[in-house]
Amino acid sequence: MTLSVDISHRLGDFAMEARFESAGRLTALFGPSGSGKSTLINLIAGLIRPDKGRISVDGNVLVDTAARIFVPMHKRRIGMVFQDARLFPHMSVANNLRYGRWFTPASERYAKMDAVVDLLGIGHLLDRRPAKLSGGEKQRVAIGRALLASPKLLLMDEPLASLDEARKAEILPYIERLRDETKIPIGYVSHSVAEVARLASDVVVFSQGKVAAAGPTEAIMRRLDLLPAEERAEGGAVLDTKVLRHDEAFGMTVLASQAGEIRVPKLARPAGASVRIRIRARDVMVAIEKPAGLSALNILAGTIVNMKPGEGPEVEIGIDCHGAVVVARITEQSRQALGLRLGSQVFAVIKTVSFDRANTGAGLPAEADV
Image (cartoon, rainbow, N blue to C red; front, side, top):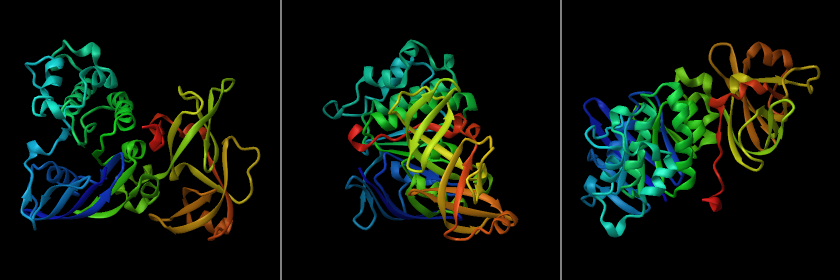
């Protein structure tokens, strides 16, 4: 299903110009606060009427100012999840979930209560009221309510922003399941590199109301210049891998990737399972000879395909490892000392311990698996 946006809109002194298409399972609308992400979500949902332009989902036009088309919000079949869960405090979890069904004609309902409850792991919460739920539980219920409206598109506006790290870790696997086990396209607003790298199939980057870039996650995340200054240290390569085997003796999991075998701390995933990893540029060392006598276990051979200045004394280097590009951030002094240039044959060296929980998640399955 393709989300197509071509709009211009002004809110006071803020001007938005957004044009992109995405057919991704989960499209992240990414950028710093105030860049226009939430405004775009509201335009897609029908909460705001654009000054000019067109928005369509899978060819169904939601708004076209030239043709004087504006489908009201309640007829767009779009599910919404906000930062705060916005549950009805006087209703049980079960009744909050059922509320999502009321605005969808019976003939168009495809979401089943039992299936949604199982997907989100909230069966034990059905009799509780929102005041008795944790922040992560509230968000899972809010997602369930949106799903039970049988939407054609699900919009999530920074759904983890109000949660602490423990609650984020709790809910991320459920969003991965939602992405992988349903056929509902998701628009996901975030300013967190870690969330986007873990969840998104495609990314649209916003800067001052305009689309700075759009494309597959792995291509966008290695463009450190596109990331907000406060998040740049979290940028780097995103690789979709599969579990090759587990090394029980040392508590390791060996992943098969296009770049080569990669060892990470042991994962609770079976052999053959898809795993997405993020290799931060700051965690990559560069060697001109294959290292020996080194504690780092991941050594990937490759060729330098791009180099550009970073911040201050830094240089950003792209290393093509059998078709997968790994990004390293080193000093200009190190670059000169090693004699690095375009075409240099090098080794990217990554410590196993850099693959913490924030840098590993469920990989996207092939389309045929969904």
